[in-house]
Length: 225
Image (cartoon, rainbow, N blue to C red):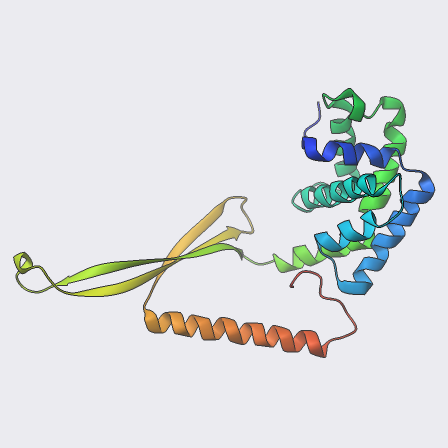
């Protein structure tokens, strides 16, 4: 039984990969190899480039492009080798409920070869390496939220009520441990001055990123936009 499940919205696009002529597979592979040198790699670049290739119509090309991006996303988050991942996808496509999108045992070998060639394109392999480097740390950022509340300050006689109020900001940071699959989180208490300091630090980092991008012109930036 297949370990991976193909979401229903991508099954038609994955199936249509099996219907591609070999020359079309090579054409798509070639386009994916040029995207990285033109503007870096992101999902919209891949979808737009592949969808623009004449196929049976733009609708089919778009479905194939979206399926490729979706499959790459799953592959990037798995620990499977590309060959093993393609085998898992082939298993899944052989066992899906819709007969119209099911890959037959006869067509499996050719489908696997086509999918392997497409997913091994440079646009995907470099993006995968970049993602590994970006997250190759003990902890990687997942999300953040700042909670703001009021805290009363009482004098010696509590029954007299609060003598003043404090505005307190609580920074919640969620992160992913490289050695674990689960997410973790911690909280940091902030005041108004701390918020200003954080803002300056973030703006400075953004400025440095802009300067670096304008200074280094020979290599595209793969992940940071």
